[in-house]
Image 1 (cartoon, rainbow, N blue to C red):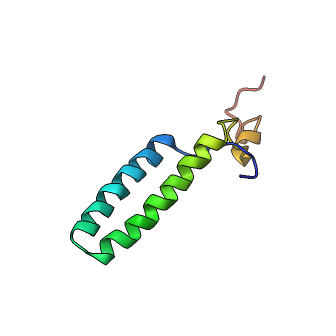
Image 2 (tube, rainbow, N blue to C red):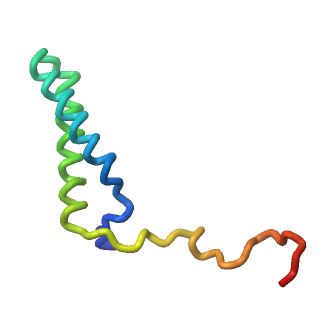
Length: 81
């Protein structure tokens, strides 16, 4: 949220998470198994929140990491330029 970018959120994973939790939630409710539907209701809620974050914040540049800051190799390959 600090960067206002959804570049680090995986869209296909979010879709599969929502589908998976929805199916298990329906199964848990149908069998009245609290140990199945409670964690999947929580996962579904979190997946929906993640989906809204993806929709609200556009994909921008990926977050800068320490690996992106390296301009020269740390180890020489023996060839000087």
